Amino acid sequence: MNKNWWKESVVYQIYPRSYKDTSGNGLGDIDGIIEKLGHIKSLGVDIIWLCPIYKSPNADNGYDISDYRRISDDFGGDEAFDRLLKAIHNSGLKLIMDLVVNHTSDEHYWFEEAKKSKENKYHNHYIWKKGNPKTPPNNWQSVFGGSAWKWNEKTKEYFLHLYTQKQPDLNWENSEVREEIYSIIDFWLDKGVDGFRMDVISMISKRLAFEDIPDSMPIVELMEKFYSNGPRVHEFIKEMNRKVLSKYDIVTVGEGPGINLENALKYVSEKENELNMVFHFDHLFIDYGPKGKYDPIPIDFIKFKKIFSQWDNLLANNGWNSIFLGNHDFSRIVSRFGNDKDYHFESAKLLVTLLMTMRGTPYIYQGDEIGMVNVAHPSIEFYDDVETLNAWKLAEIEGKDMELFLKLVHKQGRDNARTPIQWDSSKNGGFTKRKPWIPLNKNFKMINVTNQEEDPHSILQYYRKMIAFRKANKTLVYGEYKDLEPNHSKLFIYKRWDEKYMFLVAHNFSDNLQEFSADYVKDYTLSSSNYLSNEKQNFLQPWESRIYFKSKSC
Ligand code: GLC
Image 1 (cartoon, rainbow, N blue to C red):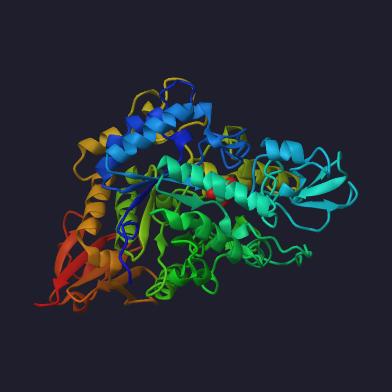
Image 2: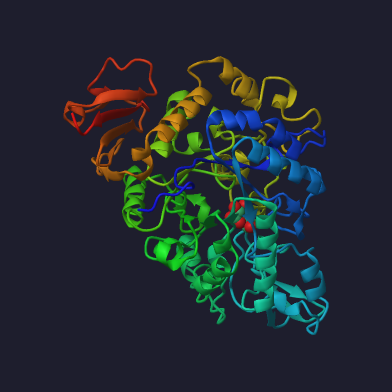
């Protein structure tokens, strides 16, 4: 196993519009991030991943880029970005940017030109199909609902958009498109950024036959077989690696819907020279029913653990894993995998213990460090996210019970993770002095950074402690992993070890006491726990997490 700085790093993900507003326009901005660098640094993380801050009409909050080389004025513009990069590097941190090149905005000049005529220089930058306005070329559905094809009257063709109509898919078959993208990558790397998180990179190569999808195919399978992992995806990523990425000492992580245990190594095996890591979604799609996130099924905990073990096993000697439980596209981790009511503190601490004791690079999403929880607004008017709003419209058309659907939004919606960071108990949680772009979670007076700074036993302090613990123990980074109780329905108990040290980590994922055999920890000493007292040695308390340690020489 080769050692690398990015393997030993902890990443902190920022969703800039919800981080901290300094300009007073209700949107988080770059100066807000600069202001809060002390907070980020104090966590002990190494890398910041910024969700898109480029010029964009924001149909999908920046995942629809209209100019790849310019920073949006909403966030402070190019000059603010240069200051941010400098400040990040001066604090000893690194910065990775979001690279969104499966699609552009329809307001990017390539598309504005492309739609004018078939002869236009940029026409072939996108994916077009002949047809008539009433019959789309096939039955593909956009990930956000509705047909994935939109009619363009001017050329009498459809264009493909796997996301919103305002996000036309780029035609990677066209080498000019690829060259343009590589030059954009070069532009940012030359500026000094330290890598990229590549948005839906598994989807860039299309299956050009555009065959219909069988009606009953579950969404997760459809992703794997139709939208992702197309025939030239590896050729394209290898080319990108050869022509640009390999020239810099950077880190790359590919977002990979459709990446699974069978195909992941093709993306991340060291000998393939493609990406350093991918984000797979096996554990985050765990509660998706056949129709996806708004058709949820209960979380199967044994399966959840198995996913961690299978992925660890797959990447044990080849490639590298990314360890994460949520991001800006999913609900809050403590609400989803913990208990955000009776065991809020305990379960939030348990989850970071899990993140910091797995093999792979851990990613923390903003706000999780204070245990921010899901939000339950009283009606759909409070929501902003295009995926949520489209799902709502579709549910209405299908005649669903909308009261029940609102509950689903509370549980699954992306805005759960997008409410502004709760800095303190002042107006708007200290996020903005004006009207925030999206309402805050009402609990900000209780859950906020300032409160938790003052409390030595807060979630925030525990995050710092666990990140430091990981950084001090390379065994937790590179060591072997084994699940000792794969069939236990409440406990997750695993070992991490190398030639020198052994760790035994035990988590109780339940609201009840669970018996915990002393045999597991014979000769070990307890080195960390999320409870202050561990009187009941042979029981794990609700949502308790313990880390035991022994040196192999004793
Ligand atoms: C990724 C992003 C998500 C976005 C989508 C389309 O999944 O994380 O926020 O909507 O790609 O770009």
